[in-house]
Length: 184
Image (cartoon, rainbow, N blue to C red):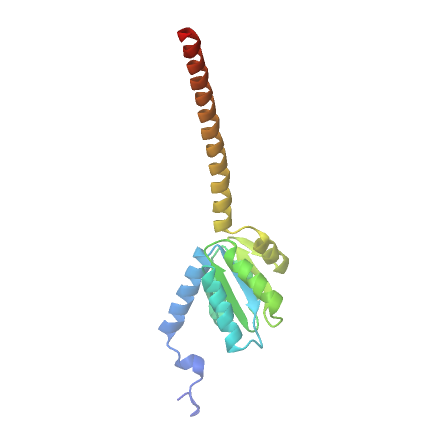
């Protein structure tokens, strides 16, 4: 009981160590993520939030709802500290190690759900407004880049092998023709 005989408030009953653990977890998210997207989710159903979480998980990212006050504490001294201004109201953090995966999923999800509103985000130490998140979402993902690089590397190699192989067969043909002429 608090002074005056009132029952303790929820935030007083949550153990300080638990709050410190949440701040530490959020701090690691802010430090290690390639991109963090902040959005309002007020009015979304549990099923819609589960859908967002599963889409994000499939893309290699995650979704986290945390108290804004604890998230702001976790942001102190981090490269993406500028996103603290977006942490007002009912916010959800979407993040991924891939610098574009979370932005892609959030942008796509926001197109189909008007209750999910992208406020902004951060990519490293660069703050992103909603247009910046949309621009990052338009970039190719790490997997798409790797596939395109492998395609670029593979095509010249096969062309080189073909070019090297062709003259050899031509030379062999010329030599056999010369041998036939000498024999005749």
